[in-house]
Amino acid sequence: MPDDKTEKTALFRYGLIAPLVLETLPRGELTRRAQEVASRLYDIPNSTRRQVSVDTLLEWTLRYRRNGLTALMPKPREDRGRMRAIPDATAALIERLKRESPHRTGTALLNHLALAGDQAEISPSTLYRFLRARGLTERQLVLDKATAHKKYEAEFANQIWQSDMLFGPWVERAGGGKMQVFLQAALDDASRLIPHAQFYPNQGLDSFLDCLRQAIAARGLPTRLYMDNAKIYRSPQLSRIAASIGILIVHTPPYQPEGRGKIERFFRSVREQFLSNLDPKALLSLDQLNERLWHWLDTVYHRREHSALQTTPLLRWQRDIAQVRQLPPATDMRRLFFHRVDRLVRRDSTFLLRHRFFEAPPYLAGKKIEVRFDPLDLAQLEIYCAGKPEGAARPVDAVVNGRTYR
Image (cartoon, rainbow, N blue to C red; front, side, top):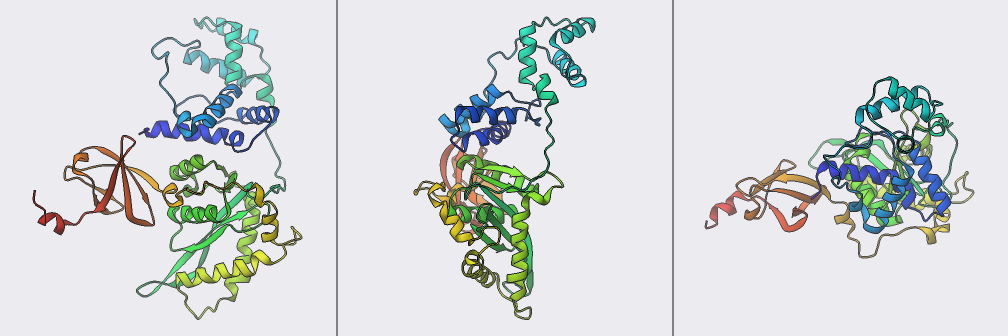
């Protein structure tokens, strides 16, 4: 079972190379995209470096294509304990000097190190390799990274999905009273088709993942999923699922909501064309509200001509249906979206999950396990220990346990 640091590093690496592996690219385009990714600064997990070289990105791409996400997990350095080419203090000094003056040459840097009394012996070739790996060459540093916001549209269906949440109306609560519900929705950028939308009793991660699961089951896999910076959209669970099925998660830059304009326009249609036509005096149940929403999507929204498309969302999406990626028919969608959490089995062979106690096999007492489960249905909990399946857990029944011979 990989530890948190290892998995976090692997997911970070996948996030960088996702634009390189999700499409079949010519060699030149692959290199160009790798150069574009390498030109940016990142907060690299468990590292003080801020950039990744093109060669490293291409190596990670090859490893991912061969062996999937596990190939991106870091391995212990073979040179651990030995002196590296450039000591950390010297590397920090070189980076500061180069960023202060991007036009400073390698010879000037070596002279400055000598004047500063730095004892590390660095050859020009080692220095230049270091500068390229850190993205500190003159060309990389002076590259204008400022890009103006431009109107965009995906070329094909399922290239880009946008996803967001809308505060919905009040519905009848089971057992009496009322509660507010929340609309989770996914929208295809090219066609404006809604792969799935549904009202939920809460606005948490569980609701969003359920909506995404049903969207993929209905309309196939998107290449990119575009969302804002909300906490639920940056969860490790979502990152793991996206990496395992080949989806690139893209977040809206802070204070730039224009990138999600199409789904905001859809939400306006929901308010003006769907919610406004509901009888405010008749309190619906959550199931009734969703049934009416899906009927409106199927009979009105998807079949009405969109002014920007000059056709209907359904017909525009069907035009590219041959290019839509699908999961293998035998894929268990429910299990694919299982949450994974670590738990320590207590001496009485139980563990706590979501305020409920569950029972594990007795031989796992005192051991750390991984629990995989559907957050909307805790009837099926799978237990793994050291990466191997160890059966299922069941809710603790103290009465039944009291009758068991020990």
